[in-house]
Image (cartoon, rainbow, N blue to C red; front, side):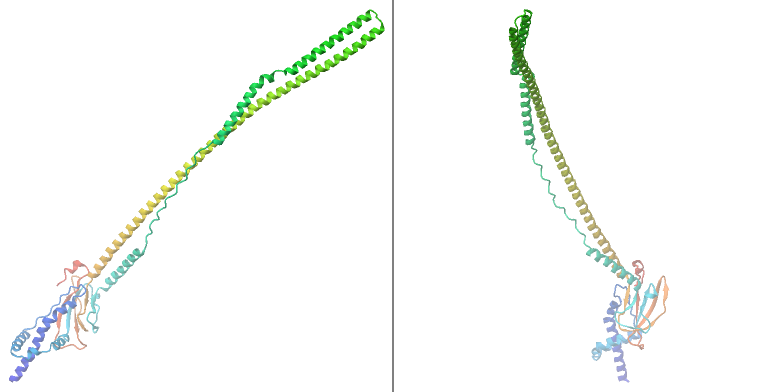
Length: 422
């Protein structure tokens, strides 16, 4: 009987020592495993009953007295504790958050409770924001092309009117010569030719003398007829009269010729005078033409200078427009860069907010391998739904009882999380 009590005591001592080792060694690890993924989980292990305390105390006392009890294998105790069922009390906002069912095999780290709908929605938003960020980063904004320095127009050559000035000087000289010649010849050409005039006067004097001789001879013949002189004398005087008349005719012919020559000389002088006057007018016309050519050349020069100034003004205006366009493109480029940076910053903030929301979504994972043996019906209170699930090590339930864990799954809303029991 005494040996039986000693054996029972040894058994009780082993069981109590295993319970103490489990409590001291494995309980903190289970608590950390259940509280993964930012879940605020509170795991409570029930206190051992009085019998177990007494047995444990007795076992500890026996352990101090018995050297056999200190040699219990820790691995055997660990296996013993892992085979006991684990009860977990879960509090969620929606019963659909529970992802296990009765009889389901579960492994350590598998999801027990999660708001998968909200998580999927936020994951899609996160992917969309990342895609937008990648698109913005891959999008290149072309920098504006800096315009090259425009070449200035070549300056105009100096205005030279030497040809026109020489033509004007030559025309003035010709005009001066024509005017001088006209002035020198006008008085002479307007009077008769002295030689022709003298010749005409001599011919007229000879004609008058011959006419007087003829008249005297006729009077003398008439007187002789009146005196009834002999026929021989009359015939002699009449023959002389005929000779005088012939001389008078010659003198008259010479007078006509001299008059004709005088008239011809006057005509030539008039023509020469007219030609001199024409030469003066031609010289004046040439001078006017040369002066008009100079004025035309000066006008063309002014028009060329005006065109050059106009082209320079257009070039300056074009250059100013190019610079303004380049400045506008630079402003657009800077604004595009600022807009892209602002969009990237906004998307980064959105991505951070989404990641924060994802981090706030509670997820409960299994702390051990086993099977879902039991799920109690849901009980709701103040918008929370509570149930208790039992995880066993095998398909058959253990008769040694089980540890109980109370796990509260907070809402994704931080304000409601603070109201969850700890």
